[in-house]
Image 1: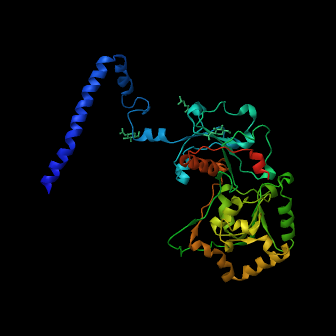
Image 2 (image 1 turned 90 degrees about the horizontal axis):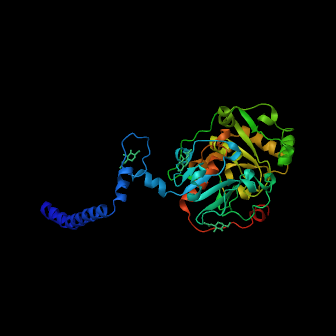
Image 3 (image 1 turned 120 degrees about the vertical axis):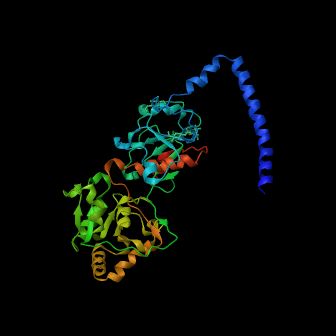
Length: 370
Ligand SMILES: *[C@@H]1O[C@H](CO)[C@@H](O)[C@H](O)[C@H]1NC(C)=O
Ligand SMILES: *[C@@H]1O[C@H](CO)[C@@H](O)[C@H](O)[C@H]1NC(C)=O
Ligand SMILES: *[C@@H]1O[C@H](CO)[C@@H](O)[C@H](O)[C@H]1NC(C)=O
């Protein structure tokens, strides 16, 4: 056995040896005939510890970086800066080279443009490289989106909370193969809580404010957040939500698919969301129907209040709202102010790493506002 093997491998190696010998002699001929090029390898051979520009010799790590599509963050949304390695460290997304360095523009595969910051005079230079795609990024609902004239037909890809975007963004449940039998409902100290930071009428919050007013006539709601003068520190956000049996996941405006982190928070920490937003069927596209309570399940706020009070006394019935956890898991979203857009940006990175297709997004406003 051993013997045949070694002869076999010698036979295999022979042509390689010949080829290498041939290459070496060709190289010599090449170097003799082109003296200028002779300097090139010398420039590239570098001394160890000479400033870390390990660009050429190291063909494992750096070629991988070069091969990855480049995603250029044209501006930081709302100027919130963060460590660009976060897609890898937090979401294990590593399909693109995410950068904020505009010098890489002419070599950039995709440019991420934040809608609120787009002005015609701040757009990237034209003509854009033919392989380059521009991504329209907007995480607000139509109620809170203002039209910037002249940009309707500039983009290749749309990114938003809408499922019919090219790049839809949301925290999603993931299935688990081995059921989790160990979930314990966190210790509860309060019945209903609500964290609300924005109360500006123009943002469409009238509906949820009216519902809250009506509900609080019948049952006490613990309210936190800027809008009500009790600011909740970031480190207290999830523990506070977890300490409540129910949490009001009231969206600021009502649009299809507009289901935000206000819903993900309670789901992630073990609290039952009471939702006000698009119809129940829309929520059920993303989570099991027995994981939340919808205000539309009740004729009015009074009967919702009564139902929540009944569940407060019926542990068995309350516990059923967590059955889905055996088979699905969710994770808390990032809550620091400067992390608000990280999930969206990393989702774009993931997309860019997987897709190279030609694509044009015609008339984004017609799509977005209809
Ligand atoms: C490539 O670079 C990395 C990090 O700089 C280093 O750990 C690795 O050993 C290098 N590989 C080669 C083949 O030089
Ligand atoms: C941006 O990229 C250019 C070109 O690769 C490079 O010379 C420059 O140092 C980079 N700037 C930063 C801040 O990394
Ligand atoms: C991107 O869209 C523009 C029109 O908005 C189009 O001219 C260009 O060819 C598209 N590029 C790619 C790579 O899809």
